[in-house]
Length: 323
Image (cartoon, rainbow, N blue to C red):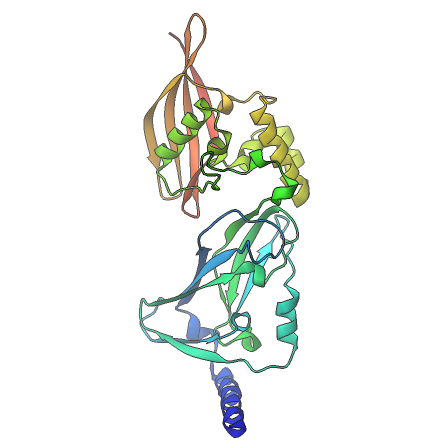
């Protein structure tokens, strides 16, 4: 039995060594790797297994010839997640990943073959790879090593995702966590059309449902409409930016900021929606009731799509007189 195990280990080692000399990046020119969130939810700091950041990884053959690559049983020898701050500083790897890669051990793997147009997918938890110490907005990407980590000069780089880490529940007011009032279930943004996004946002404001109102808002972009806040925000650390966003949100809720977007219309009508795959506008006529007259305004909401979800990131208001 011992001889058989040694033979398997030796074969795996020699196979890897022989092939590594003959394989170059040209062998993977038609391969691509992409990532997206799997069952996306609200993420908090720390590496608690009860709050994973699960990412769906897909490797695709875009060429006409068979694509062959290796996938380790322990995925830490096949890929690297990279998480960057807004200042482009990279977060540290977990101690477990570092220990595995610096300790002599046998790496078992499978060779996978994909024909033209075929894909291979799996799900990994980013927190198994990266230490996430605090709440902030980060950027996430992945490097895949088709010949395993020891041949990391060969790698495929994925697309980049925005990763928002919220303050842990004990460190923030419950008002800042969008939840369904009846079920206490965390609200999740849905892949709705741009006009529906705007419609739901206005109705939520009419009903003073703040959680729903902020669900499709890009607060970071809206905050930077104010030149003074923009200068301060750009020059701040990631932690300070997070605090600024929380304060900005609270100021809007308490009407401490004069801002047209929190005005409550008595009625509204969506008159035009224009958009391409990434950006668009939704034009809305809104009426505001006063004791002796109605004020009529044209709101044009600017929207853009991030990871399949439309968000309001800017707007303009034109006064159309009274009625």
